[in-house]
Image (tube, rainbow, N blue to C red; front, side):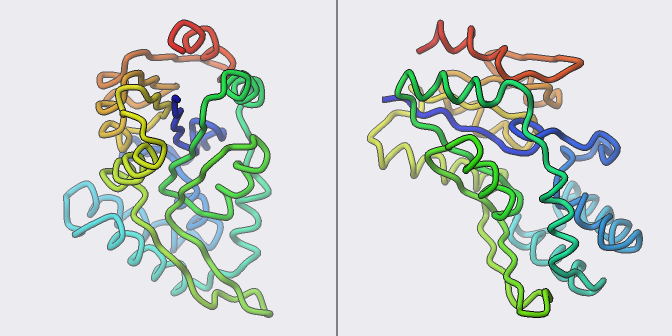
Length: 229
């Protein structure tokens, strides 16, 4: 049994290069803040600086602060829907997952982003398991009624990875990870095979393989995995 773990944004989904500030991998968190208002976006950028300066106790603490900003600036369902509707799966993703299913590989998505986006990605690619960090609940007027947060980023991603591997009685050295952000370094170092896909340098340095393309196409990973599985 082999499990192939994936990051979502920038790996399975196209990244928004216009939001790349070089600090952290571009994500739907940033896109949502910008969609809500320019003021929200500016304030959220400050929270990223605080995160990089280790001013937050945990990823959950950062999310709570960011959710607070979203609510402060009047977030509602239409803002999130705009982000969901704009999400695009990378070329070659369907071919890659078809190949993995043929090889009886268990697939899992672990994202520090929004559950609604992970749900869409999971359904389109028929991913076996999906973990995500934030789910918004809306009332009948499309206002935020409540939210749920899970620490599925940085070291938290590794916790969920280990838990799923334990469920299948699989050693991490027999697992695969594919991602793009420096927040995925912990995962890349633990698995037997890791692939940095158009990734930040920190992940490239920690990974077994690195792929850099002008036009991202995940099917290029198939020959690498064919020699690994």
